[in-house]
Length: 180
Length: 199
Image (tube, rainbow over all chains, first blue to last red; front, side):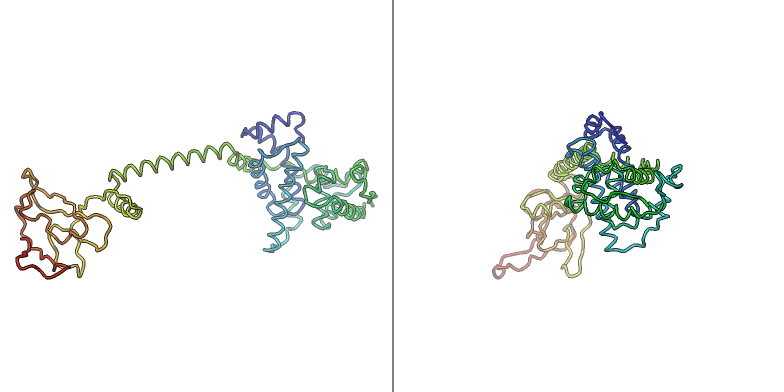
């Protein structure tokens, strides 16, 4: 899920509007953005992700940095869309998305539904992640899916690092009670 | 139970923790999936439509079309070549800005309105206060004696006069059986004794 040393060239070509470069960027980050939105129970995650990628294309000229910073920058856009989505859901309450509905949108992964990686049962783990508060879930997912550092997560979610550390601490404490 | 160090003070270093690695690995394997081909196509099409170069080109084309339309429309309006209703509207609008544009020639038959007074053959209906110059069509011959209607400009305030007063030169009237036009009373005073109506 990385472009590697050719990232600057790909980014430069994408800024010029090269479609192949944009497609390469998209394939690099689409699983991350979609996964982050789906794991946060966003209804119509694919539509929201489409908005994120359109924003990415329009703002690409203002981005500066390497591939890791690019992931963090893009997740910042995705997180803002997520927050907008959550606010709209509060203003206009919708029926909660059943977990089966979210899972149905995901491709089948061999072995993923069977017992565990590293002894953790996936079903129990997903249930435990779902049980986290939205803030806790967001920081855990940014950490787990994108491997962001605490300062990077703090930048994405717009919270102080101390708050992010506290959220992570509580989230990990709850996840540690997941039964085997 | 998963035993992870909840001390987040050193959380960045805790990725080496096998339990955390297992947890993160499970989440990655479950959620980091490539989008379906149809979704990918839809997203890439939206991105292609939003790319900066395409937007700039679209704006440039729109600006060029707008400029051509503006210049062309202005030229046609100045030459009086627009369709009559459009030319009338444009001339009226331009009149508000004190810009004089030619009005289209009136080829429609004279309009009659209730209470508009006696209809005078050859004169079009006049709306008081109309800002557009009016025209009248009279069945007269031209200077060379050819038949057919001719068009004469009538300036506002002049609409009650005959289209072709005799004795003023110009076209000779051959077949104007219409009734004489009665000149309204002089607005500034009584009619002079020797003032006659045209006929």
